[in-house]
Image 1 (cartoon, one colour):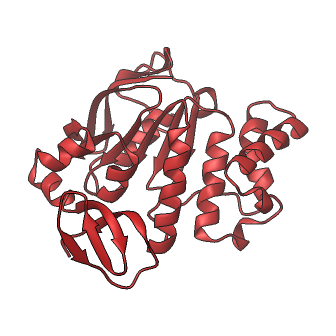
Image 2: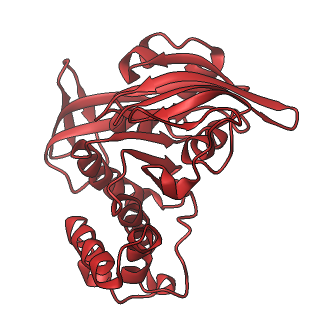
Length: 275
């Protein structure tokens, strides 16, 4: 279930040069400014774009080798959650999730059974007969994730999975997503502009700038020793662990902070942003 990528991809005047290996069970965050090549990377792994030089291997199968081999997306063991979720508006939630297995040759009953199992796994089986227009942002995100997981991919790709959500919903979905990724046997690669997503969801962070990897390390190492001014500005958040009670946060490393009125008691992770 590993991925080996060593390729160059040209898009007009822009060039993405990428070399990395992703291990089974790992969660990799791709951070970078607009135009750094983050979405191009995901689309190339998924088979929506082709490499110009080099190759991509998924689970020991070469899926792209610069014109010699190119497997289309349905032939790759990849699940993709798009930034806008790309849920078919004319289909029910159940039909949306069942679309993947059906497009790969499963019969209707078999595909719907698989879809119901994943919807139940994600706790949204009650949405099965709903139409996308009636879903909240958080519900739509869960449906998109279910559709990506239903084919049991070796690789899960997520393009800004939380960006379209409001702050309150984002926090809730982030926790749920972390739980799902912790049990996913394959490797997960997700693009985000939010360093908090990277810190809380990923065990490895790759920073892209102008189509080039400028840093590849653990979240803690990125925070400690950012390699570029962009990375330093990006990881401009402070994460504090402690215990909160009655408007006071007692920090694990010593000290006490006074907090606003919040409905929280017990262990917490406090986030302090520069703004």
